[in-house]
Each structure stands twice: as C-alpha cells, then as structure tokens.
Length: 354
Ligand SMILES: *Cc1c(COP(=O)(O)O)cnc(C)c1O
Image 1 (cartoon, rainbow, N blue to C red):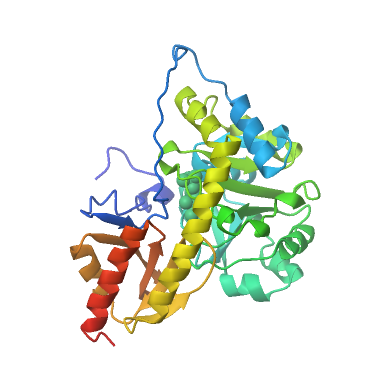
Image 2 (cartoon, protein in one colour; image 1 turned 90 degrees about the vertical axis):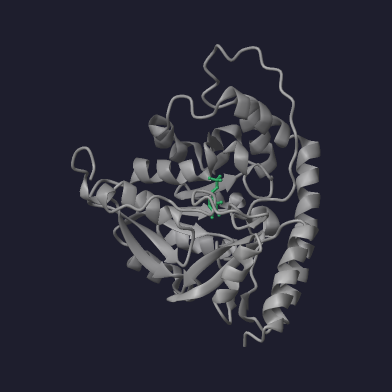
C-alpha cells in the first residue's frame, strides 16, 4: 500500500535490482563491469561553502581534448545514466513519442522510458545487424531517440561507425541516434565521435565508470553538436556535478592518467582473451559470446552452476537472454579474481555438468 495512489507507470515499476542492492554476500565481485584498478585520492578543498561550477571547465576541457571535440560539444552528467534520462526528458513528448532499443541491451533505456511514461519500440540486435538503415528508420517512425549500445552490453556485439552514419542519415529530421559508448575504450577504433561534426542528430554517451575505473565517482559525458546539447542544458539540474567530483574527475582526465587507463585496458583485454579460452574449453559452458567490452557473456550448461559460484562468494551477473535464464555475464577483474572463476569452472566441469 502506498500513501496515495501512484500514476500507473510508477505503480508498475520495479526498483532497479543489483547484487549490491540485494545485499548479496560475496568476496569476488565480477557482476557490474567495474574495473579492478582502484586509485586513491587526497583532496584539499576550501570552497565547499559555494555552489559548484554547473559544468566544471577543467573537466569539460580535458574530456573535449580526450574525445577530440570542442568544449561546447561536451556536457558532464551524474554518470551516463543521467545522460540517458536527460535525453528522454528533453526529446520525448508524453504519450506521443517512443524510444527504439535493440534487445538484448542495457536495461536502463527501458527503465528510464517506463519511469517517464514513454513507449518502447523494441527491435532486436539481429535487426540492428541485418536491416538496412532505411528499414531501421521506417521501423522506428514514432521514435525520437534510437539507442545503439556500442559495444553492446551484455552481448559485446559491435557496429561500425559507417553503419551509424547511414542510420543517422536515414533518421535526419526524424530522430536522434544515441550511441552509448560506455565500453568504447576497450575497442576505441569503433567510436562514432568523428561523426559528431557531420550529424546534428547524433549523440554519444560516455562514462568514467568502466575503463576509467571510477564507477564510484558517478561521472559521465553527453557528446553532441552544441545546438543538439542546447535543449538538454535547459533540462539538466542547476548543479549536477559536485565540487568534490569535479576535482577528482579533472585528475582522472590528466594526460598521465589517460595513459594509465590505456595500459589497464590492454591488460584487461588480454585477461579477457585468457578467460574466453577457459570458457570455450569448459564443458560447463555451452556458448560464449565473443564481443568487445570488459565482460564476457556465456550460456551455462546447467543453471545451478551459478548458485554454486554464489555460495563460493563469486558474484557474476545472471541474465535471461533469448528467452533463456541460464546466461551469465562475467566482468574482467584482476588476475586473482579471474583465477577464482577458473576454480569455479573446474569444480563445475568436474561434476560432469554436461
Ligand atoms: C555501465 C553502463 C552505463 C552507466 O554508466 P554510469 O556512468 O555509471 O551511469 C551506461 N551504459 C552502459 C551500456 C553501461 O553498461
């Protein structure tokens, strides 16, 4: 029972559930695509009596340099998730517009649309790969936003920038193509950033949560032409980024720190190749989706193997994909964390799961 009656769309929402919100006990956390690399920071701030800069100039300039864009093409948000929410709030009219998503994909597009009473036009990842840009445009005719997650979470599937350009061309004057590049650092040649100056209906979402190893900081970026960002700047809260967050984000985006991030990405990509080798050789695993990103998604021969991992303190992310509940996404952690995955794989294979 609620205090007063709720709007129907809110009544029907389920709160976002994660291993953390469910207070699962674990020792090895490979469920949320976090980086294993933690940095420590010491801060001296003497101006916290003042409101922060609405868009911290040092951070915006550093991210613009990193993405090879101009500063007026960069908006900083409370994680990429706030970018998703701002796009829906800014561009979708209540009860008339929809968003298009290609499933299976990142869950927050649907959660955000449901929260704002915006309809979802669901196409599939295979539609995205196989349909022409014109067909995608005609099948998303009521949509104001077409979300393309590249690389896609949780399948790792990728799409070439040339195809994104074709889709943006086909959708000109009709919809904005939103390319969610949360994992782009793990496959950086695929970025659509270079298209921003050519397409006013292209928006790119970025985050510091994954390759930059700053999930706890809650920092993301929305990248687009200045005229595309202008209406979003009217909708965003006045002070979305605290002084504390801005001061750390500026350090995370220093040239040295970016070099370090790239080194870590190289290590994580090769650790991932090793994990894929183990998984493809395990008789406890039926399918391995070999894609990009700091995660691997696989289909278990026997779903009870997931419970065995949880009991051992190894927390991974279970998924229902293609109507089947026996999928699992493993984030690429440290060497010792992945060794725990190997121990688990050996233990379930030994039981003759297949
Ligand atoms: C993790 C993730 C995000 C969210 O990033 P935050 O910046 O932590 O909000 C956005 N999109 C995708 C596809 C993700 O996997």
